[in-house]
Structure formats: C-alpha cells, structure tokens
Image (tube, rainbow, N blue to C red; front, side):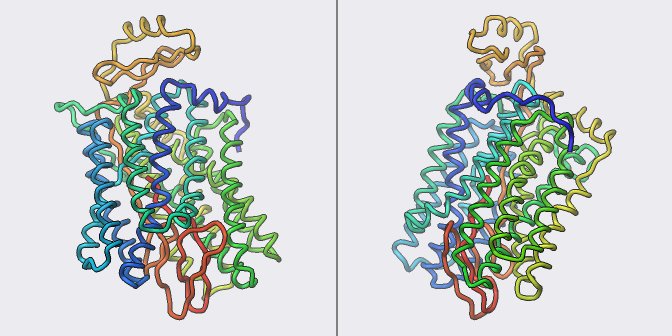
Length: 516
C-alpha cells in the first residue's frame, strides 16, 4: 500500500460542492429503487406463474436485455444530454413496471405478455449511478475530493442493496414493483432538475462522441478497472452462497443474515475510512493491492474452525469491498479517453454485475461438490487473479492519463478569461474556488483552484447495465431460481431473494438488486 498524505477533505465538504447535496440525494433516492425491483420482479412472477424456474428465466431476460441495450441507452444520453435522456428512460421504465404489476395482480396474463413487459423494463433502466459518478468527476475540485466522493457514493450504494430486500419483505412483491417504478421515476426527475446535470450536455451534431473500445490501447486502463470490478463481483457472489452453505451445514441457517449484515457493515466502515485518506499513488496503482488484501482475507475464511470465526473473517473481508469498488470506479473514470468518462464507469458497473452472475453460477456448481474451505479458496482466487490482470505499467498509466476526460475535455468550454472573471465574482461561500454557475449551453463546469475548467459535455454518455440471474435460474442479485431438485428455500435474517441452491441444501436470503 502507498503511504498516505494527511487526511483528505471531510465528507461534509464533498456535500458542500455546488448543487452536490441536492443532486446526490435525488440520485440516491432514485437508485434505491434498484435495490427493490429485481427481487420484487422475480418473486412476483414466481407467484403469477407458479414456477420459480420460470421466474428465474424472466430474471435472466431482464438482466440480458439491460446489458444488450446498454449501448443504445448510452447513445441517447450522448445525443440528447442527461436532462433530456434520463426522463425519456425513467418514464417508460415506470410505465412498464406499473403495467407488469397490474398483469401480475389480476392474474391470468399470458407468459408472452409478461416476457414483453420484462423486456420493456430491462431496456429502459435509467443509469443514475454512472451519471452521478460522472457529475462527481465534474464537481470535485481535486483528486482527494473526488476519491472521497466516490467512496461516499459506493458506501451509499452498498447500503441501498442491503436495505432493498427488507423493503420487499415489508411491502410484498407486487407493491414492490409499483414502489420501484415510482421511486426511480421521481428520483430521476428531481435529479435532472438540478443545475449540475447541465454538465452532461448534448453532443454537438458535427462532433459525435468518440467510441470507447476496451481492446484498444486507449481503453487499456478502463479494461483493467473493469477486470478488477469483475473479480470483486465474482468473489462477493460466491462468498454469499458459501456463507449460506456454511450456516446450513452448521444447522444454524439464521446466522446467514447476521454474517452478511456484518459483511455489509464492514464494507460501509471500510469505505468511509478509506475515503478519509489522501493517497500518494493514483487509483490504478492502488487497485491491485486492494484486490490482493481482499483475496487474503477471503482465503483466511477457509481456515475458520467455527461459524463465529467465519463470520468475523467475512466481516473483515467486507471492509475491503467498498474501497475496492470505489477505486475501480475512480480508476476507470480517470483513465477514460476524453468524452467517455460515464461509459468508462458504466463498464466497471457492468463488470460487477457480470461478475456476480458468474460467481453465483460457479458457486452453485461447487457448493455440493467441494469442501467449504476449498470453496472459499476458489472465491479468493477471483480477486487475486484480477489483481494480476489489473496491474499496469507506469508508462501505460501516463499514456491513458494523457487521454483522460478530465484533462482533455471533449466539450467546448467557456473561455478561460470569462471563467476566471466569474470565479473572481463567486460568492464568499465558495472558498474552494469553484463557480456555482453553469453556462446557458450547459457546457461550463466548475473551476478548480488552478483555474482550469472541467466540463463533461459533448461526447459524454451515460449508461448502466445489469447482469444478475445466471445458468439454471440462479442469480446472486436478481433472486435465485432452481438449481437442482429436492431443494427448499427459507428466508433468514437480512432478507432478499430466496433461492434454491442445490440438492438437499437450504438457501437463505441473498442481497438483491441491479447496480444502475
């Protein structure tokens, strides 16, 4: 690990950035719907069809459609800007969810109609998380503040997905669909009403957004960050299922909820503490070390002789979850070519969801075929391998940094003389030197203490994707379908999708939700 400088600015300072509190609160409110929608959808459709396996297939459809149409959603925001494109996605998303809820409630709807509605929901998910991370990049006056903003954002997201299943249990699946649509639509509309969203401006017709090709040299930094996020996703999904199996074999299945809750609490604590440190190394350089520490802590779980010690090891590994994820987001954003920052963090977002799917499928195959210590070692191998793949040469990092969207904005910005004049007349409350104003064209971003304009404008796109339910109907996020015969599903503690995990095993609840 690198040696830290003195503590970074406080979290309160992050929320005092121009329009940050209002924008973040609205985005967080809207994103909370994603902690509810996946589980509500699968459980509602399970009730409507009378088949958990069919519900698992619908969950797979939801995830697959969202991923396949991710580029199209990115194109909409690139062409129209966030203020126009996000509501154009959120309102159809809510309408599709309301219609699906009505069909499930009245019963008797044909499965083809349910499939069409599920596809409509998956195709219109508004990417609130990636959009908010792009706005953090524009609002933060320096790297330390940006690191803290990303840590705060990631911790809040973790808490959303911890609380979401509890909401589903409280309101039941069909009302959960209505609640999800309402929350996401309202959150989106309030978010786009903030002046900060003008920083993601429509692309100029004569200058279309540059592509982001992960396999090209320019996309190498983003690719490494996505690989790291994938490794974390695999590890988290596998550990959750192996915890369920460990508790079941210890004949104390109710302990699953407490262990997973301790993991989430560790993630929140670790993320907040990590964000308080000002690091000497950049995010891309720190990321492999975080992954290695995460792998070591998960591997230590394999040696736990009791369920109590296993829970402590899982909680300790959770302390690295939010730091690793926030650093992956930050590395993707900082190494993105000009005009692609939102798409870059979206790739990291998608990699986490894809990793969760892969980790769930792998865990389902292993849980009844291998000893638990071996299972946890396999889970630890994912971040360890990702750490190797995420390592980058300093020269490569400098090359991608040179193409960073923050250092070479793709959008036209206000002339520097006008910006400095505006900065000089800024209100006394803006001691950090940022300008609490946005140009009529929405392209002028806040101004840092060095006087350099930062804008996210033409060429910036936002998208989100999700991938949760996997082979045999089992998904670590969207809920679990049937994997093997003769299984039973029970809900213990923490609450989320009850899934069948293999012949003769009892599945506890697993945290649910897609990251958007």
